[in-house]
Image (cartoon, rainbow, N blue to C red):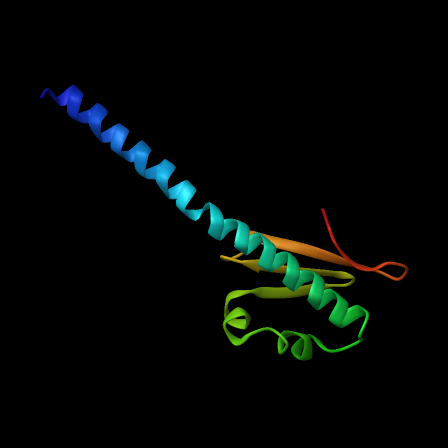
Length: 103
């Protein structure tokens, strides 16, 4: 085989790996989006509706989730994220409607 054929074969293999990786991780990405949305909404409600502290609200999460999810508050907005902020969600507190997921 010529060098040109080896290069094209390598490109094809890399493309197959990239496509396979995407489809393999698609479920994990969807799970992370759901988990961060849930964490943001629950923490927002815990803080703004129930009037509890951030530490008390985070203590409600399962232990492994406490280590994986980062939750921050900025006024009426609560943001939860994973993977160093790559996947995240926000919830906003409203006096009339309680907390809702933003976006």
